[in-house]
Image (cartoon, rainbow, N blue to C red; front, side):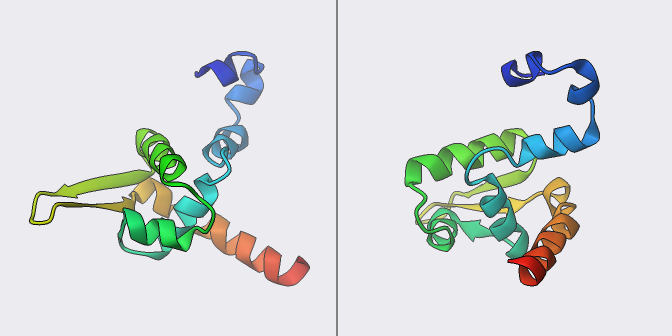
Length: 110
């Protein structure tokens, strides 16, 4: 349990919905996961171009956080020139039905 969760009652902290909502905390987490889920893999600049308004620093920290949560895979290619590609993990790919439901909701209600 992290510091944010320490003040949450145990019955809420152990709730599957609460735990899932924690994945979506942060201004850019959902968008990064959505874009990585729609693409096999993306380089940093490609991902940044798909998310207008995000800074390099914030994208870097968001990717690190999502990688720590097991939602983003980072692969470094030691080629000339070297590059890094990001992709959604299987754990993140299982969020697809949630994104599809959000898409449908947006089409029908917003």
